[in-house]
Length: 130
Image 1 (cartoon, rainbow, N blue to C red):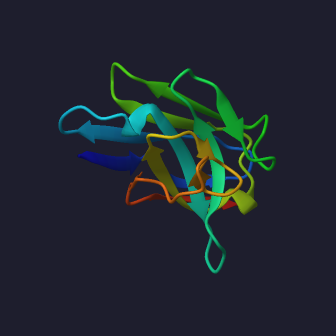
Image 2: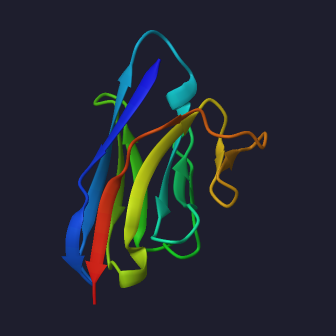
């Protein structure tokens, strides 16, 4: 069983930075956390993919965050990170981490088999003011 807990959200001004963390708690052995991602949802908008990372460290980003956000994973600490720089008001939203045993498609929000992702966290709020 896998549980994910996000932290690090907050309120910043445009141009500022935040680093989100997603602590991974695992019971037993699992492949689910081999592939992980960050998603966000703004008020009255659909959830969208932000970034995803695979077991080999390869990463994929949404066009809107390329060059500003960096996803990384510290396996020794069982923690996923999202470093967010040059934040914009349109980055405001609830940020969620997710995990799956298949690579994650950032564009569709599913795994590459087209299935819903296995595990989600509860989210952390990011608010960027102009």
